[in-house]
Length: 137
Image (tube, rainbow, N blue to C red; front, side):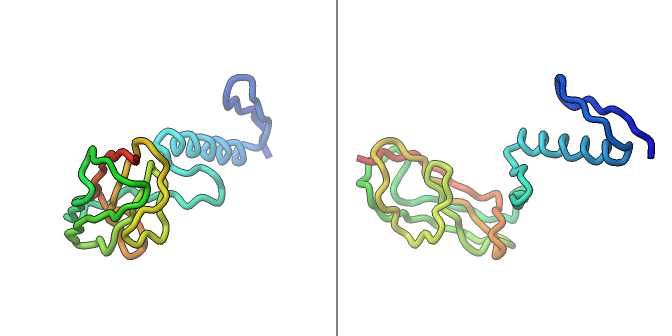
């Protein structure tokens, strides 16, 4: 087996077979590309699919952008389903609210970013999203 040296980053060098060097380089480049676009790069992470444009629309109807709210409030939205959306995912400050049932509870005081995003039956996101900023009193 032929052996060659691969320079990856800075002073890091690795001597290995040509096949292993190519595989390692592809892995590192893939991880770097994933990190640059915000995709998961660790072994157990499921890569996020790009959102699908399916004609869906999402509108948050209450509260309105800029509203002041209590730490617990009902979030109302309208989902116009396109060809693939079946439900929505709700995020508070970028964190997925698993099991969301209509009421956001116990939010800490301050500005909070609320996002409602359309999702498919497999929980992949569609392009349709609506984001508001509210102030929790």
